[in-house]
Length: 234
Image (cartoon, rainbow, N blue to C red; front, side, top):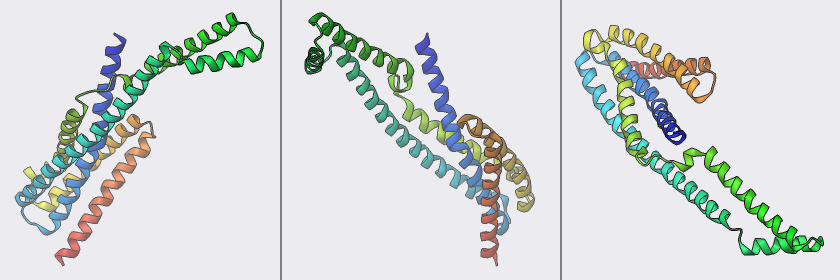
């Protein structure tokens, strides 16, 4: 039961990590692109076509990045698991050279063979306790998720795309690009603020600082996009 709960907890943590990695970028990048296009393009339909094309491409790129990152993480897990397994095997019987060195040291202290044997046995016991500690306190290294790479790629691509939908929704219903941008700004910055709160709680940082940081980043990105678009239009 404990193992199943541990695995379930790790799976939930994986999903939250994927959300934290992808959703913020999904909100900011299409938002900035749509803002820049709203200054130089008069058709919301054209803006949607361009933004959705970029959003789809971004989702694929983010998915590939998540897949490769998860593969690297899986290799690290496998390496840690091998180390722990080797430690368990070596804990079964203390290597002979370590036994001999221990006995030689204890012999210099004029201790009897019985005490020497007890000392060696205690070393074996302590080694086993150390391995048990590693096994029970580092379950993420013992139970790596074999499907993590595929699931991470899917989750990151999905949440990136879902985040990108938010700033583009107003352009479906409002035909004036500038007015659609204003509505999009309110919706997207609100979502960025909430996302920052979530990310702060998940990562253990101050949620309010994280929320304001996410909002400021989104604002700066849009300001830069609008500035560049204004220069191009002139």
